[in-house]
Image (tube, helix red, strand yellow):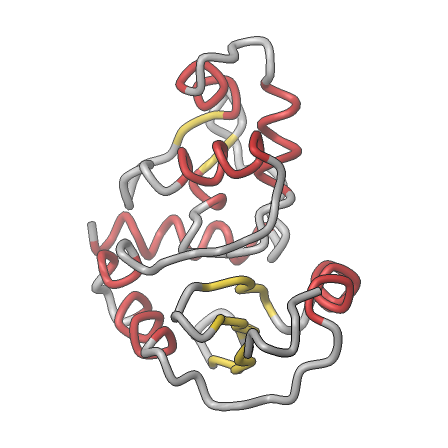
Length: 170
């Protein structure tokens, strides 16, 4: 859990596909970006990592960058800083996810090969599923080896919407 000397900010952002819960640190790095209606997914990790946070307004401009993304400026989120806690392997997967261009997809196997760990497809999938920063770390761009939509923490309908949105605006 962060120390009291490290203030964190909690904001809720309305989007066309539902409310996003945003947690950022004082430097403006995203720590968590999850769909608010999936508390079973985010609440246990949130409480373990952050304790109880009072809702405050996002002072860093992250909310406006997300609004621009949803308005069609897909690059608006590309430069946002992230600071999610994870293992070195998870962070390497999350970093690789950020290199997948908007409007395209890749598979878990291709991502494992890109990371130099071709036998780690399942581990890549687990790290992808543990991603605590939706959209900005675009885990929705990873599909099954046959191109089919596979699991997404926000739900497959949201994944489909995000992929269609990005294809339209890329």
